[in-house]
Amino acid sequence: MKRIGVLTSGGDSPGMNAAIRAVARCAIDKGMEVYGIQRGYEGLLDGEIRQLDRSSVGDILHRGGTMLKTARSERFKTPEGIARAAEMLRTFGIEGLVVIGGDGSMRGGVELARKGITVMCLPGTIDNDLQYTDFTIGFDTAVNTVLDAISKLRDTSSAHDRTTVVEVMGRHCGDIALYAGLAGGAEAILVPEVPSDVNEICRHIIEGRNRGKLHSIIIKAEGAGISSEELTRTIEQKTGKETRLVVLSYLQRGGSPTLRDRNLATLTAARAVDLLWEDSSSKAVGEISGEIVATDLEEALNLPREFDREMYDLISVLSK
Ligand code: F6P
Image 1: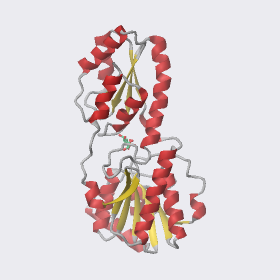
Image 2: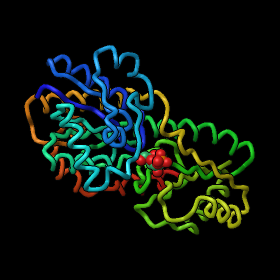
Image 3: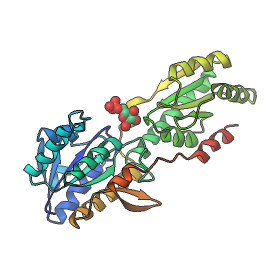
């Protein structure tokens, strides 16, 4: 394979630039031509495609966001859009495509693969909702951002003897709340994967206060059943303690990628280029138990996401 493309799609995540850099430099090292596609599938449809050289990807390894920009594309979700995108790739002579994004981007990759394009998907999302990899690119950085916020919030919660509800991202996945809750010592977490019991949470807060706890941190994944505002009001009303809500929102999408995210991005990108060079079939490339693993793309898309219930249960044991 002599000419490949790379794009970033869906919500941006810290580490996407590291992946783009590795795709470009590993491919150029093999003598391949690399084309950067701006704004994900939307830019592909509009032919926003330009060749990259080694210097194109200089000074981006440590930067959050994506030098190729990203977008969500309704146009691309139609049969006509998919056909046009495949045609645009062929017009540029691009035989293989690296898609850096989440599950929606993967679905688009599968559609292009069905049109004869060889597609390698990398897990670029903070949500950690892809089963073909233990962790997604950006998840570690996002959780560390949440941990930093929790640390700061502890100070003011203690000063005012308050409960603080922290809403985190993740869409339908609770892993940001789960990992930040365990590492941050939250009193309780609410996640989409486990039905919430607000009475139990309030009881937990009151019992903690009776044992001398100065404050409580509750982490709520945005996809968990109850609204964050309602949860905050209910906790304040039932516990009699001032309760404040902090929605971290897009803070979790930015920042310089951590070591883990930089190297996960780099190693999976390097493997993707190797696979394209070897004319492999379309794959999703992730890391499982410390090994870089390539999974058949359609198979990867259909793997059911597993939630770590053991970690979830440990949080309430540790906060008693
Ligand atoms: O998928 C990443 C993510 O940050 C989710 O956690 C969040 O719900 C969503 O993107 C927000 O989407 P947008 O950036 O389009 O508002």
